[in-house]
Image (cartoon, rainbow, N blue to C red; front, top):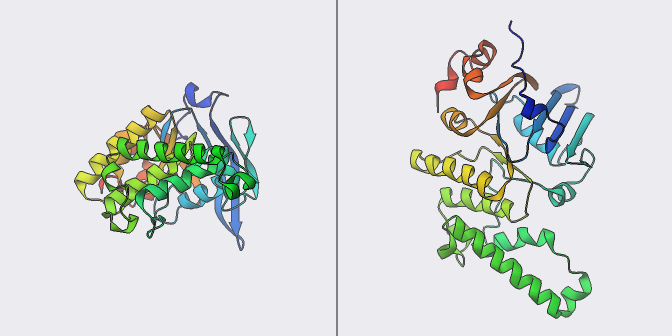
Length: 271
């Protein structure tokens, strides 16, 4: 068995934005994730792949405070995150989307984005209750920011519609916009291509690259659509039964026998 692909000097750099060191978690004695490590550089675009049940979403839950790791450390820049609550981790600069869309369906498209932006609201309770000048200034700023984000992703004409009225593909896009409204340093995308048709997937690939380049945000992507992953990701980590079995650039991943075996002999070529 050949050794894991070596990590490039850029990824090994101490300047990695998201530095995950040997985290793990068990449920009822079952080791769901073991000794997971990752160094995601600023503006990096990495993929996290593996068969169903490999532990990918569990890793996301550990990174975002849904679960607390039994061991290991998570740092975002100089900030230790391993014991933070989800809202604290979002405020620190990690935002995520979910495999199952979690919009507020009975709110407008605009209000879905505005609510996410309020995480950065600096006004206190008194300003909010009294509707002070500062409160109105900040609310106007949130509205303008939300409209700008919607315009970038060509949803500005749907701003006053209910989120539930959007097509599935547009709902996926809105969830990403809502995550961007929190001003993240790291964006975690959990199967964003799920349920999309081929044209929507092509548009999604372009959007993810645009997000990384325009907002200078690092992206970590869970995805089962291997052509999409191989097209846009600079580096890929492969999990199987909670263990990292391979890490490298797309060409290394495609040809690694451990990865091929994990996908039952050829699933990497499937959509």
